Length: 353
Ligand SMILES: C[S@@+](CC[C@H](N)C(=O)[O-])C[C@H]1O[C@@H](n2cnc3c(N)ncnc32)[C@H](O)[C@@H]1O
Image 1 (cartoon, rainbow, N blue to C red):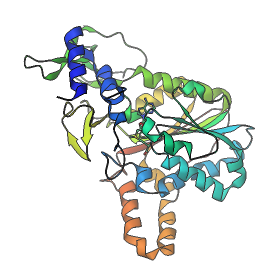
Image 2: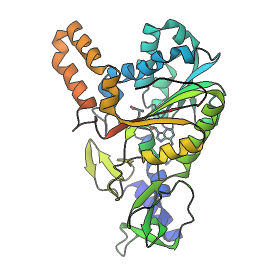
Image 3: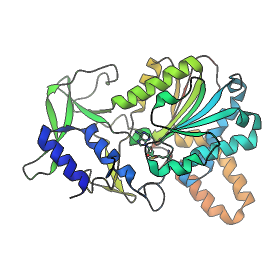
Image 4: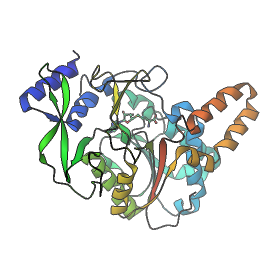
């Protein structure tokens, strides 16, 4: 039994059951045994690999919509870049390099970079990225000015609660222990008081996944963007709207494992509900475009030309580069399941896809 399992079982024995969000908060963030205290999280040797880890072109292409809207961005005296859950910071690095290469005035305008990052394992990489890299633990520390914000595979990493729709009411799903003291899911007896975030007209048995942390975070960001301006890109696994089941999944060394397996040593994530994210952003006075599939987004902003250019420059790397592109845009890889949402203030007329 892992230390995390022992802690969770003691908590459940004390309280009878615990919420899904509390369960995963302990598994992921426990200050001694949590998953994010672990060494090999991202990369080939870790549990999963992300788009910026696959190819520099992901960050390069994401920079294009910013360069194309620079005439609006430059109207703002102060400008900062913000990344939520940056990991080793490869995405921010690729974006900064591209801006610096293609528009030095834009680069000079970026006065500071804010990284909302929980895992100390990544701090040393993030501090090296820019002369004024700041690692924050609270979105409130992002300044009141125009912000360019990125979140790649961040929302899927946040612990969520689960609610099931039964006979016209929502009930929270909890975690308890069976007779053999194994973890199991159970449904609260009392119905939940709902708010505007819950889906309208759900089907019987629909499982809604939601965390107040995520809603508060999005609300704070949108309020700031609506007052001071900003562009926010969210790229993530997206929940398939037609499916009503739980989307929680546990991954170890690139393979799916049981949710309760080897707790503290596996990455647990869920598929964010882009309709919910959209709803919260619109509710907080921002404009939302998308979601677009990652494939459509990257192709619309020039990934094919960029890869062709790189292949011409490095013919020996042709297969590797084409393989990277396939992983980013192929329908059976990240192309279809990953979605891109663009959120902006309402003050300016940005031009996107
Ligand atoms: C799936 S990784 C993605 C890393 C990076 N964005 C990339 O694309 O390679 C999720 C990241 O979110 C961070 N994270 C998870 N929960 C967080 C939280 N509550 N606050 C800040 N960062 C968090 C993790 O430490 C990790 O860096």
